[in-house]
Length: 207
Image (cartoon, rainbow, N blue to C red; front, side, top):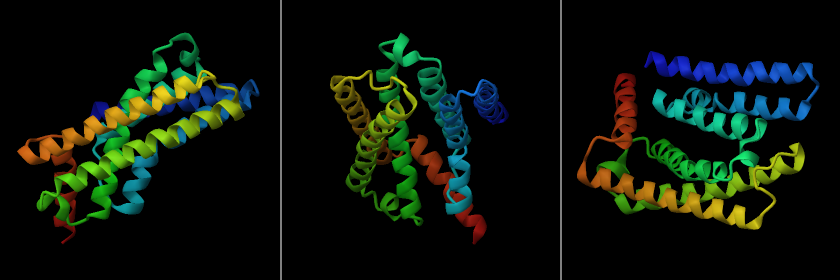
């Protein structure tokens, strides 16, 4: 747990230090890019504070690593341009990340975990998959906005790249949704059970 927290703050430090460096150089587009990565890393903590849903520290670290790959290495250092596989790799991983976010949203809406207790697995799979697909669409909108406003090259100027990213996010999101359904059906320990247990314990303490 301690090493996860240390890594999270290390990643934040990277964003902060390089944003200050770019401020000195008056490269405001890069400053905006790096500050965005820094701010986005706090979303899980803000969500916990405002909504009251606990998110595992490991999930927060995965988000920060993803932000490091997209904002810092991908856009700031130009990995999207230098490595043709970088964009696809991130979109494949984003299917899992956004699917997990869908799971968090579902638990937020279903505070008593009735869907999980009654094993409405089909509904859970459909919800997580829908969020994953929606996330893939919004990510492409974000990439288009970044390329247009900040001169990045996340979409490689190609419709084929955009469609490939959408397909990757959709397929992996679907596979992750099915994985969640399988884990619930077989009642095995997984990221699903950990998230449910974490929030169930919190609910019991409040009572």
